Length: 229
Ligand code: CA
Image 1 (cartoon, helix red, strand yellow):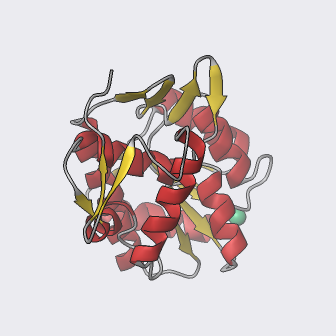
Image 2 (image 1 turned 45 degrees about the vertical axis):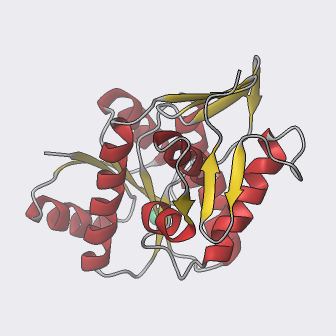
């Protein structure tokens, strides 16, 4: 049974999360501030973390960044009281996989937790690394390096690369990317996929206008070029 870590300082919210998730059969542990949460995340290595943003000691963004820096790639679902778009972006940039804006329903929470766990278990059976020229992507730690230099790739970009790597050479439709990577987020469109692909290309392609690795498949979506010497 998956183990979840709940990092939330507000007692009523923490209790509600624990009761709901245990009722669904998950095992849970919890932490009430940022430093304790980070410690538990690294020692217990839960299957998924529910992470409040406003926390004493270390906020959720900083915690998530530190978690990724330490090479922990488990899914993180961020719980935020703020509905501002900037916060969502910061959450994803810090390495969270998804976010829920408070107040949310426990039904929605359960659906997102299950979706993230399902995605993580699918991904675990696929390739754990991808090498494109001098760039190596590590999907277990969610990190990327060009030679010895760290390359800044956010978690959603990594999930896109992971899906491309799992199905290397095959065309993948924009809808498939949306289902696999955005499934519960607020109304993404196929343009979101294009925007992310453009961002990834600008980081990894020697000539983003004439991509060598992530190829456009007209009328469908994208595919990762086959093995290239
Ligand atoms: Ca809080």
